[in-house]
Amino acid sequence: MQQPSAESLWNEAEVKRDHSQFGEALALYREAEARFRAEKDPEGILMCRLAKGHCLRILGRFGQALLEYQAAERLAEEQEEDTAVADALVGKGMALRALGKIPQALQCFELAAEYYQELGDINGEAYTLWAKGGVFRVRGELRQALAAFEKAHQYFEQQGNRSGATYALCALGGVSRVMGRFEDSLRFYTEANTHFQETEDFFGQAYSFCGIGNARRMLGAYETALEFYAKARQLYEQIGDRVSYAYTLWGEGTAYKMLGQYAQARGDFTEAEKLFQITQDSRGKIYTTLGQGEVLLLEGKIPQAERKFRSALEQAKSKKFPFEEVHAELCVRLLAQKRGEQVSFTDIFERYTAMGSTFLQQPSLPLNLP
Image 1 (cartoon, rainbow, N blue to C red):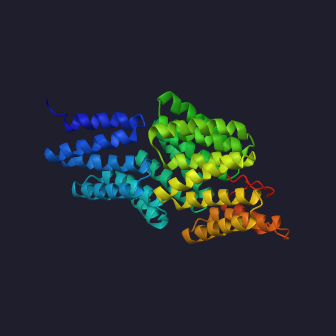
Image 2: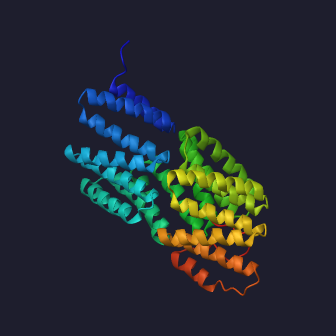
């Protein structure tokens, strides 16, 4: 029986990836790469290394994804394929960002932007802006993140890139939420979800379902939020995603906490924490630590809660996550208030405002973090 060609394996992998079947696509890309190697096709090998990086990143295997992108970058430089060099740099930057290496990630994005500008590749520039916006958001530079996502969306729209424009809408939904613009967040995610449904992008559907759940949660519609988290969870489980799925668990756990269903909240936070440990997502671990601490505080277990809050605060400071650092400091002060101490939140408000967020009006327990 004749073995499938490298090209046919590649095409099959692309179909799987388009349908968010990333684990199956990864296996096919590996087979295709082996065939391309046998055929001594350097361009085919390069394409497979890039595609493998994308799949591994979605699956939360950031260290492996980084290796694939680095290999793709070297191959692209050897072949003088500048577009592929830029694509590899963006992928490498996103893997580094996920691993908490923010300065290195930003360097990759800046270099990629230079390549795309020289090539006149507007889609590439938009992709880089979208990626850079994620770095700005992590650094607590929310206004800069919003501007980057808006410009990325504009560029994608100009190029007729519907997929890119829709993912930019999700990015706008996410940053709007942490800025306290909850109605805007809901609108962006809902519009994105409509497009994802039309194009049968299952990963995008899951991503936007989670976003809608988070926006609904911030608007106080906790039961409705749980319905959207359930939709996101089902799709993420089918896809095999562990990254966005973990954040969905955190959001769901927060909704349960707001409803006073502490056992369910604790279960979600624990499951999310395990996934964040696997993917080495330091920022995610801070959120689950805070969630666990607040459940303990609400149950009256003040010493255990304080240990959790202090741990989250130390992590946020050491990893240089300013937005999460303020969250942790807020939790520490709410605990002190619970103990009967006189506490001021004035500087907390000022720090949120300086970063571009107005979500917190009056701190109280339970705390609904965006």
